Length: 196
Image 1: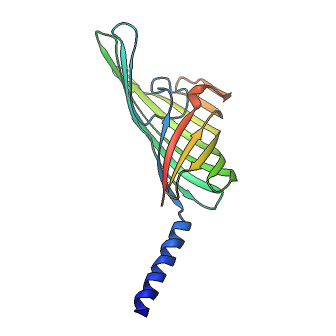
Image 2: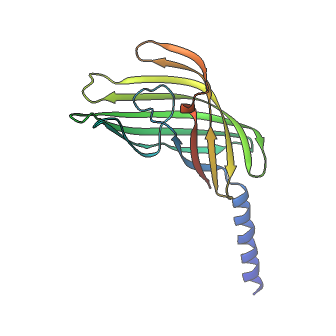
Image 3: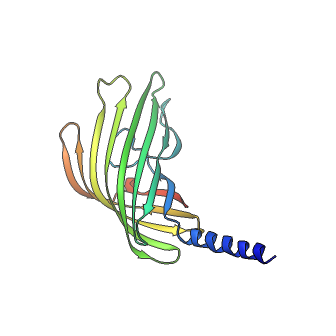
């Protein structure tokens, strides 16, 4: 009986320590507006979007943007995001499709980290490529910048994240480049993560 009790207590302590020391997280990101064609902002959507436009026009977008991260310390995390989007636009006569993909390594510094709430700055780089059906070559964009974000832990395992705005450098295949602060609604992104 004592052995069983001792083993049960040991398992409880180990599992409790594991729960306190969750370092890894997996997640999905999303964004509020379709961006697969323009490559103007460094983000991908997760989910499916269908929009009926004037006349016989319509647009369908499918996307997935997973991420994985690791907390180096209580306030500092590094991660890697990836994304894939497929967009199909029908003008009533023909259908045109675009495929986009990208990668996004980043680092997060939590300036404020309370019990359930956190405010962070996320700095990173992104490479995105998009190819429209029938186009001879792909278009691409390189981005390096900083985004502010907030996180809210809805449980010990799950958290909701949101970022809005960015300050960054963008460089396009055609040679155009810019350094700008963007506070447009297109920069608003939401995500869900699970820690383990």
